[in-house]
Length: 261
Image (cartoon, rainbow, N blue to C red):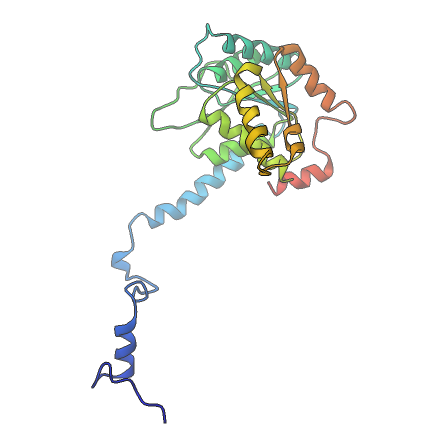
């Protein structure tokens, strides 16, 4: 017959189990209502706020096709060559029939909106509310404001027929890597990703080759997702070339893919 442990003489089996439980195991599954943080209800209602951002932006932008998303630094002044280069690219795209989507703020974003604003096609700004407030630039035919970065990033991808990326910082790199990852993994349709101004991007591309490819973190063919172009006219030509055998709108299978983005 199995003998009971005498580690806790005179105590019941349930008491011995209680004494052997760790502090983590003793935490009740459902905390008393008095200890539930007051903001839990706010967290639940926040889900509806996120849904509202997706619904409102989709309804406002759904008819804006084709479109090109342009990214770059918010810190670039109007007299900088990057600003003027962006404005020229955006104006050419707008006159060629592309709506232009930017982040709606200053710097490269403003240059992108400005070029499109004075062109033939809509200028769209997807603004973001930040702790250090980002002022919306005045060159927007359609201005949509977001509280959540991920909802805003989704709209950049969903409505873009191409990505044009000018020099920028962390936010610009984030958008670039997001687009490359989605296309590489087959979660998004294949669209042109164009990096503008080769001297700025050269070091990053060299690192991709010397580290990511050399150490087999990515396949050599993954770099084919990127085009490096300096001239504004060549940017527009590269986008048209990508779509010369098909239309700009998503194909049925691509539309289905984007529903699962």
